[in-house]
Image 1 (cartoon, rainbow, N blue to C red):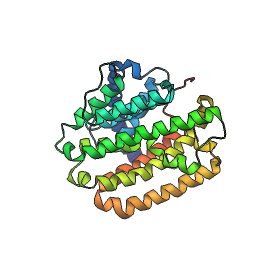
Image 2: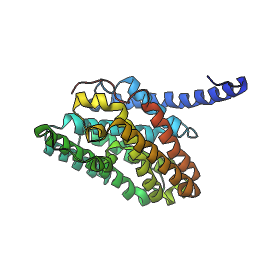
Image 3: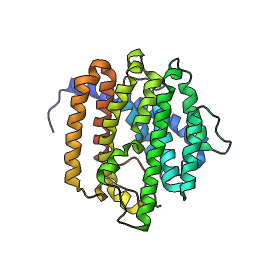
Length: 302
C-alpha cells in the first residue's frame, strides 16, 4: 500500500464522506419513488443495494452538485431501470414493446400518461420538473430525442433476442450491437441532468456534449458487458462477449475508446464546457471502477 500523509488521508476521506452524504440523500429520494410506483420496481432485482449504487454513481460523477441538483439525474437513472425492465422482462410480444414505446414518446411530447401507466407517469414527473427550468422550451426536442433513442434501442434489442430465441445463429454483429448503446441510457440521464442544472454555456453546447456523451456511453456499454456476462448468460440477455469477440478483445477496445474519449474531452469539450468535460471524464472513471467489482442489478431469474 503506498504511503499517505495523515493530512492527505483526512482531506480525501472528508470529501468522500461528503459525497456519500449526497448519495444517501439521493437514495432516500429514490426509495420514495420506488414506493410511489411499486409495479415498476420488483425486488429483486431492484433492491436497496441497487438504489444505493445509482445514487453513489451520480454523486461521485458530479460531486460539486447539491442533493437537489442531483435529483433529476437520480430519477432519470431509476426511470431507465424501469424502462429496461419493462421491455426486457415484462413485454412478451412485439406489440407490447411498441405500445410501451408509443406511450412513453407521447409523454415526452407533453401528453398526459394513462392512469394505469406508471412508467409514463414517472417519465411525466421527470419531464414536468425539467419544464420548470427557463430553458426547457428551447431544448425539449433534444430531451425528447434521447427518450426516443433509448426506447428505440431497447426495442431493437428485444427483436434481436426474439430472433435468437428461434434461431441461435440470428445475432447482430458486434458493431451493430455497440452502435445500439443508447439502450444503456447514460446519455438520456446526462441530458436530463444538464437541462436541470446547466448554465448558459452548457445549454448552448448541448449538441456537442451529447455527441461526446455518446462516445462515453459506448465505453460504459462495454465495461458493463464485462461485468454482467455471467448474469446475461443466465437471463438470456445479449452481451458483446456473445458476438465473436473475447474478453481480451473487449478490454483492448475499452482502453482504446477511453483514450479516444480523453483526447476528445481534452481537445474540444473542455474548451467549451470545462465542468461538463470533467463530468464525462468522471462518468468513465466511476463506472469502470464500479464494474470491476459488481453490477447495478440485483440477482433475479427470468
